[in-house]
Length: 456
Image 1: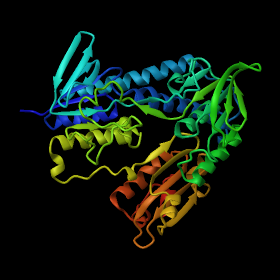
Image 2: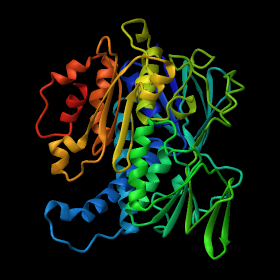
Image 3: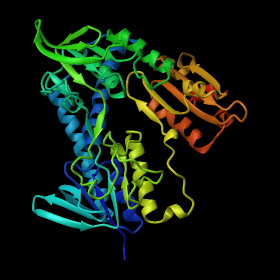
Image 4: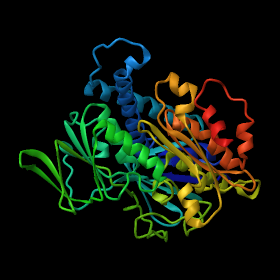
């Protein structure tokens, strides 16, 4: 008799688990209350990157004279057209995901699910209540933007990230609260659109968890764009219509940032309430996340968690791989050749301009651990393709073991960094040596040649 696998949440983790488990012979039911494909994926990740691409097109037009082109009228943002484009992209991706699930025989149920017991899932649908008995359950309900007690988003002047794809109007002056990955992407996006931007940085550098040299390169670009940085300032309140300014963000050090709009980009909270987790005996952390082991199991062996709700790296790529590993574990494949998901080797990227990407061991972390490393760095200013692109910003940095030459990590700042990091990510995951990168015959002229130069 086939294993009945019930999945709550149709984001990257749920979709990957569903299709892979179904292909392995499981009977799969996927329950989703909003949009198959995942709110964080289709409402956050994809729209933001699409808007960044629009900003990139505008930035390219502004630099057209560097390519020997005569000055012409610069393009202007048309919010309605951008919104239509976003809806088209989201619709096509959603339809593609639904078609894939159907082709694998996954049963999809639209409704709100909760656990009634360790093996029972109850779903409230438009047609009524449906009870499902499951041999295995995956909770992959994602997260939502965190809203502090001192802020009241109105969808007009005070926005959450999900209210800015695109916003009701292009801000004249946007105050971004939060200098993590999401915050800096919005700074880049709206400064490309022509908005004045002020960024509230609670610490002494943007991207506080990233390599200091990487953060410094991004800060330099922001300053060239005219972005105002409030460093060491933590937002504590937002006033509307004060002193003639539509919004004023007050900071704990007494400074105030005035703008036409304010954007909250201060993290996310897991969607774990109302799921009946406690009734089913599933432990939930004070943060709302579901603690998991290396198989993504909760304290109840047949109940799994993946994606943002699991408290691991909040990346779609990580969620998808978690889903795949869960499917294999449910179907017993972990008893064969099986490699656990190593979160320390997950590549990540920030789609600013220049792009930022990293993977594996960071230089600062190695020093903090007292670990001996070899760090090599090559600027794109020495790369022929970067000159052809008229964009020599950034560098490639590779961290390796000085005794063995094994690649331990790396960082890239520059054009197409998100694509280029894949080479270093493969080296880190497969335990390759810097000599393996050096000995690769790469295409000339390309930006990837700087990877081999940095590996020398």
